[in-house]
Length: 320
Ligand code: ADP
Ligand code: TRP
Image (cartoon, rainbow, N blue to C red; front, side, top):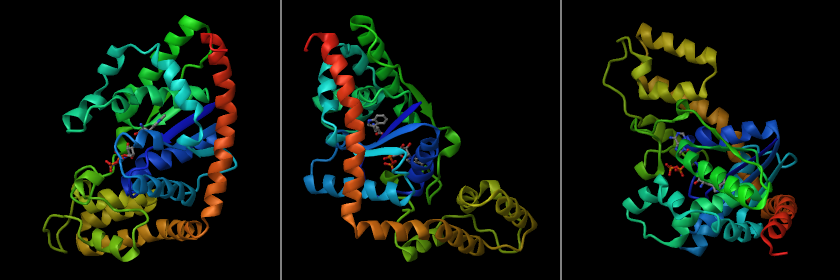
């Protein structure tokens, strides 16, 4: 089975991104032949500063490698290092009905939020389709917000196959469940746009400061507390083992436990989990050659598939 997922290079990795996207993608990596890429062509729809795009791209590469991406199993690459994808996108554009793209929520949402409407933004799902079909991926792990785009990819692949013969495998989405939504410091969904994030690779002191500022109710130390309605516990449970979680829940209910104390334990859990990754990231950042080498090898692997696919596609449509 082939598995592919793309990640837009869009800023610092926070706990929500890590648990909601990166961890599930890395877990799936074990289950087949994986392709994971940094969607820098897609990022051009929202980033217009060249230096930011370059820096963010390197940041994502470092994040994934520090979090344990297995470079023997997985082709890890920059989307723009596989230019076959853009050729395929053009060919697929010709079997893509306008109506299919006009119905996409993500496009409509972006326009509603004030992004200028341009062809890149509109054609975004066709580029995603090309990413997936170029390497003939079977499974595509994505967040809920991307589900419709995978349906677009399936439609386009079927339409192409109907018109030109069976060239493409029909991909399927693997959607991460709602249970994985990570709350932010203020209890809303953790998101860069709400400024309520804890960054995985943030400075240890700064992370601790943020944890100590998590909003709670004003119950005294002595009072029994409800873990299920507590913001601090919501974080604690995400990082704790089952045993630690149950133990903490009963300490909440007994009373005699202050929120400050729970926050301290939470900060310790966070450190235990992420300090080694932070260290690994620091090492890699000092060795950009290693990162470049991984991305180059990943691109070679992805390209070898994309070139094969494009040969069949070009022949099927009459270009070759
Ligand atoms: P942000 O909301 O901070 O801008 P993005 O929209 O760039 O984050 O999300 C990147 C990836 O991280 C997506 O796959 C998304 O599903 C996942 N993600 C973002 N925030 C959360 C969260 N709070 N809980 C779970 N997953 C999240
Ligand atoms: N659009 C996706 C996102 O913002 C990233 C992406 C680009 C992608 N191409 C893809 C995801 C192909 C899966 C498959 O999250």
